Picture 1 (tube, rainbow, N blue to C red):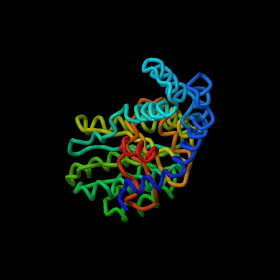
Picture 2 (cartoon, helix red, strand yellow; picture 1 turned 60 degrees about the horizontal axis):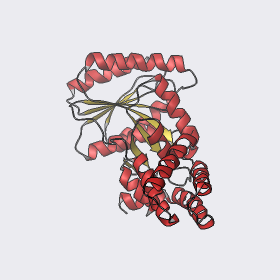
Picture 3 (cartoon, rainbow, N blue to C red; picture 1 turned 30 degrees about the vertical axis):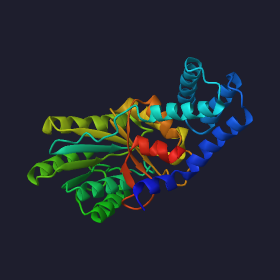
Length: 302
């Protein structure tokens, strides 16, 4: 099965939830009027698209209906899908990792799929012929280091680790030294996800960032936030909170298979001004792939 088919399969519950709500509105309200718009707005909100994004999409829909003098509800449906696709495709989702070496720092709360995402990304990069090093800088939990070891072994990439409680910044410093000596292409840095202690997290990420900027001033950097797709609107709230703590360049949405809450991606793309870079639709090492907004939209609406 190709990844697009896997994507369609993984998003089937989200597609069903979104399309069922939209189709119910169009079957109930045939006339193109304000009542139709309000019902569509509610359908989007109930599909985890989010309040602000739903209001924006319907506002744009109203403008187009008026401008293009649309009176057929089926045409309204076509335009609605176009507006949703527009929100999904407003950012460039490609990875900015063109220098050798490049840095990828991964942040996110424990349980969102951070460790497994790192393992899967490392495996993808290795498949592309890249030499990858992983820094286990989440030293707060021994389990985090052990889990990362399992995944790096599975991916066939190297890891730098220190005992539980070690200074995360010192782990990153050691990893950068090995990165230079070992002629690696990519360094992936795991970080602790203790968002409830924002000040500590901010200080820790700040120290790591300072070392990276000092030791590797001219390399491409991606700072990716891992979000659990099954949490719906909570994922959006979490993303906003992390954005306050550190500069986020992209998002990883995990666990989209088996949930009806995948509509949150539309809201995230619209509200955060941060692109989704990876999405996960399964547990296999190949089930986390670069986000393709067009494929995602097609999987939802085909």
